[in-house]
Length: 398
Ligand SMILES: [Zn+2]
Picture 1 (cartoon, rainbow, N blue to C red):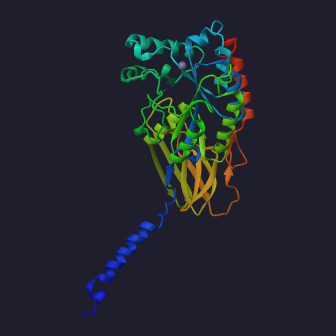
Picture 2 (tube, rainbow, N blue to C red):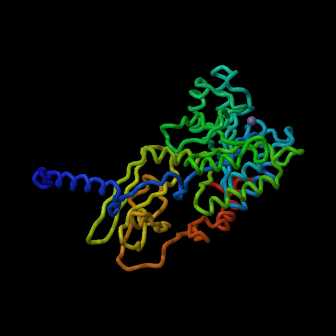
Picture 3 (spheres, protein in one colour):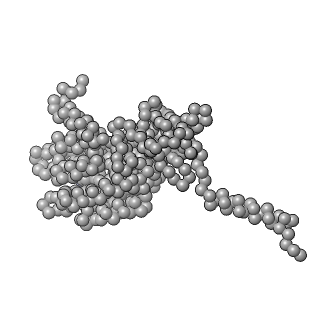
C-alpha cells in the first residue's frame, strides 16, 4: 500500500515538528519594554577588585596615584590601631593619607583593630576587635562595610560575629574567582584569586579566568615597591594599565569589594516592572530592591526598544545617561539606575537618530562611546571634601 501522508496524519505531524524546531532555533524576539539587569555593571563580562591589606605606605605612595590616574577605585583594608598610632608604626598609612584615599573614592575596609588571629579569640574579644575598629573609622566619617580577616583566619563562629558589624569579608584559601550569583557566594567568605603581579600568584591569569568564566577576581596586594618586595611600582603600573585596557573595551568591570558585592546581591533580589504606552510612545520601568543601606549601588539595565529610537531617559524627572546597544534580537538601551529611586521613563521616537550615547553630568562620553565620570570635577570635589575633613572640622559643617 502506498504511504499516504495526508490520510495518516503524518504530514500534519511533520508540520508540527518543523514548527517546534523553528520556534526553538529562531531567537525569540524580546518584546518592547522587556528589561533585564546585566550580569556585571556596564554590561561587562567579568569583574575585578584591587584589595590592599595592612596599609603599608607604599600603597599610598605608589598604588593610589597609579589607580587614580586610571580612574580605578581600590579597597584598602586598614588596621585601626596602626592608622591611629601611625607616628609609632613607621611604614603605615596615617590618618590624612586615609582621608585623602577615601575622598578620592577608594573604599576603606576594616582589617580589625590590631590584626589578631580572630579564630584564636573568644567571642567577646572578636566583638572588641570589630567594635574598636568601627569606632575608630566612624570617628573620621568612614563606615566600613567590608573587612579582610587578618592571616585569612576565619571559621563559622567568627563569621557569625563579624557579620554583625560588616556585610562582606574577604578570606583566603582556596584561591578562586567568585561567582556572580548571590546564592553561590558566602559574603563573609569571599575568596581572593591572586596576589601580587609577578609575585608568587598569577594576577594576569586570575583576570583571564574571570573573563573566561564570567566571574569576579579579587586581587590581594600587600607592600608595593618595598625593599625589593614585588611588585615594584613599575610592575604594578604595568598590571594596572593591562586591566584598564580591558575595562576600556567594556569587557572588565573594575570596582571595590563593596560596589561589586552590593551589585551581585541587589541584582539577585531586584524586582523589575515594565510597561509600554502606545499613545505617548513611552516605556516605564520600575526597579525595586528590598534591601537597606549599603545596597544603593546603581544597577545596569537593558530595555528592549524594538525598532524605535530613544528620545530621552529620566528617573523621577532627572535625565540619566544611556547608550544604545544592539544584540541579535534588536535594539536595546542600556542605562544605570539606583534601585527604589522612582520610575524610569524612556521616551521613544520613530525618527532615526545618530546619537547612540547620551551622557548627563557628571559623566562625559569617552572614546569607547561610554559615559565616564569626569575626573576633573571629581578631583575638585575630593579636594573640597579634604579641606573640610582635615581640620578644623567644625569650620565646615554646622
Ligand atoms: Zn594583614
